[in-house]
Image: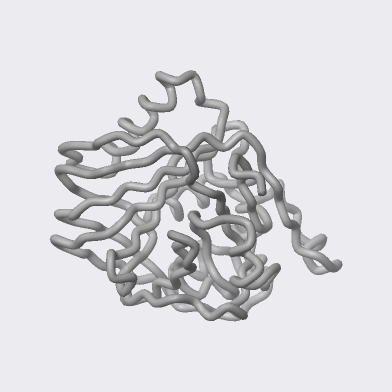
Length: 241
């Protein structure tokens, strides 16, 4: 078992252009990592993988363990083993957090590597979103989210941020920079995070030095011109706009 490897299903370009069909199941996914994030077939909510469990956050922020046979079109998971532990204090917004995490990997000369971070805290505020699934073909992700996405806010809530970082040169394979999902301590609330605020947190960071990508099988995947995916649209989606 390679604890320093990122396992990814499909590419963000494919998801952005509308490839939302199942590639593997949740059960298969959990053989490759115990922490990470992604989405489900038809973009049916946000995925949070933590402590070897896969949670599905729905359009109203309600979360639960996803069925083992649930389809996965896109995700990135790894193992958080022997990571570096550190404290985080006085975060007023998500940009403060991203800048702090950037500084930490920059100090270790690791900007060209992937990373996974776990942050546990009692959060003052978590602004997040999720969406209702819709079966479609070649419908771009931004269009799906425009019609099916909902925003919500969690206040004074204990839980965990799962943060995944991809370097700039991997743009298109995944989103460059930090991508954050939240799951509450009881596993009942979660979503894709676009802002947060907290004072004291315990964090663990793990550097990832290899990646395995499971591409969809069959001719349907090869009908997508992946290089045509709009990076501006991807950025807006990732930032919650």
